[in-house]
Length: 630
Picture 1 (cartoon, helix red, strand yellow):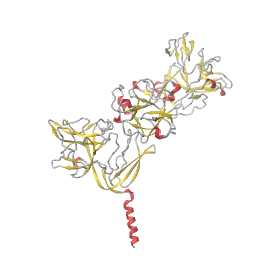
Picture 2 (tube, one colour):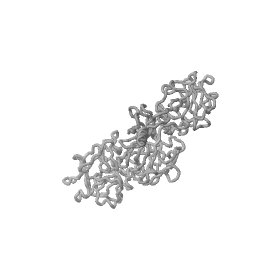
Picture 3 (cartoon, helix red, strand yellow):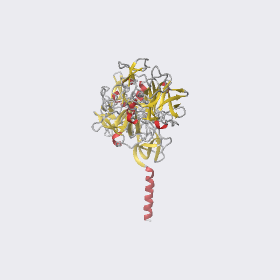
Picture 4 (cartoon, helix red, strand yellow):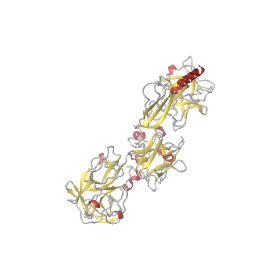
C-alpha cells in the first residue's frame, strides 16, 4: 500500500510539472493603465523618448526599460539603444523592478530595490536616486503618460532622458524645465508592467523566412493572456504575435516580415542570386562602388551612375547577400570572393568565398544608428535613408565598430568608424550598366554582341529602340538568321544588340524579375571570360570592316576577345569564314576577310577625345590603330 501511495505521488508530481508550467515572478506582457496602478505593487517601467527610439517610430515600439541597478552618475538609466532586452512577459530581473506608492494626492513615488527613490527635482535639474522620495504627477499622453514633480518658476519640470546621444549608450533619467505642452525629444513617456506571482507557461516563437527557421524567441506568459509581442528582432524586421490566448506551453512558427529590408538576399548559396551594387555614401553625387579588383576596394572616384564602365570587369562590381538578418550575411562577389573580417583590427578585406563562416558573416544595422546626414541633396532623401544600413562583423562586440571607409580620393581599404554617421552607410542598388554600341556615320545601324554571367534585360525606360537578337546559321543563304529576344536573356547566352536609330549605347539591368527562358536554336556562344587571340582560330568574332560591312569574321591582329561578348563557332558553318546577319530580310554586307575590330571598342579623335560619331574622311583611333572613316 505504501508503494502504491508513493507511485501515485510521483505521478501527481509529474503531471503538476508537465507542460513547462512554473510558479515564478514575471513581468506582465501587457501594460497596466496608469489609473489602475496599485500602491505597494511592483512594476517594470518602459521609458520612451525620441532620443532612445528609432526615427519615425511613432508608437515607440523600440522603447527601452528603466534600470536602477545600472546608474549614470547616480541616476537610473534606460537600456542601451541597441539592446533587445524586452522584459514583457519575461521572468523578473534584478535591477528592473520598481515599487509604486500611490499617494493620497494622486501622485506616485517610485522606489528601487535598494531602497532609494526617484527624487524631487533640484531647480528643475538632477535626478540622482535619493533616500527622499519625490512625488510625481501624471500627465496623460494616450497609452503613455508623462511624469512631473511640479514647476520651477513658470516652467513645468518633466522627467527626461538626458545624457549621451542615441548611439548605443544608455540614457539617464533626469529633470529639466519645459513648458506645459512639451515637444522636446528628451521628454520621457512611461508605461508600467506589473510583476505577477503565479503560474506561467513557456511560449516559444520560431521565426521563419520562406518556411525556413532563422531565429527563436522565448518568453513566459500567464494563462489566459494574449500571446506576447515578438521580441529580439533585427533591424528592418517585424513580426506579429499569434492570435488567441495562452493556454499552455506552446511553440509557434511566425513568418517575419522582411518587406522593408534594405536589400534582397538569398538564404542559401544555391538559391537564385540577387546581384547588386554595394556602395558607400548615400548622396548620389558621392557614391563609390565596392569592387573586388586587384588594386582597390573602392572605385577611385565618385561615380554618379554607380556602374562599372568597363564591361570586361563587371563581375568585380557585383555582389550578393547570402544568409539572414538573425545570424548575419555572407557578402559574396560575382568573381568568387567574399568580404571577411581583417586579420587585425575590425576592418575588412577579401578572400575566397569558401572561407569559414565565422570570418565572413556580417550583421546589418539601421534606424538611428545612422545619424541624419547633412550632405544628401537628393530629392528622395527620406527614401534613401530608409534603405541605408551599416555593417558590423558578427563576432565584433556591441561597440562603435561599424564598417566604413576614409573620405579621401585614394581609398584602398575598409576600416571601422567610431561615430555612426554618413561615412558608415551602405546602399545595395539594382545594377544597371551601359553597353557601348559600334556605330559611325556610314552604318545604317549600331551593333554590339553581349553575354553576361546573370539573367538580364533591357531597361524599359531607356531602350533607345535597341533590341536583342539570337542567331542561327542558315546554310542555304549562308547568313546568320536573327530572331528578336523578348523578355529576359538567360545567363551566359550570346546575343547581338542592334539599334536602327544608331544609338551609341544601351542600358541593361540584372535581376530581371521574370524568368529567363532558353534561346531556342541560338548558335551564338557567349563568353564571360576573356578569350586569348590564340584560342580564336575556331571562332568568328563580331566586327565592322573598313568598308563598313558588319558581320562575324575570322579574328585578325592579335587582340583577345573581351569578356561578356558573343562569338560564332566555325563548327556550325561548314568552312565559311565570314557571315552576314539577316534581320528579317535586311542583310548586313560582308567583304573579304579583314581585321575585325574589337567589340565595343571606343573611338577617339587625334586629340584623344572620345567620339560617338565619325565624319567621312576623318582620321580616328580605335583599338590603338588609326583608320579613315568611310
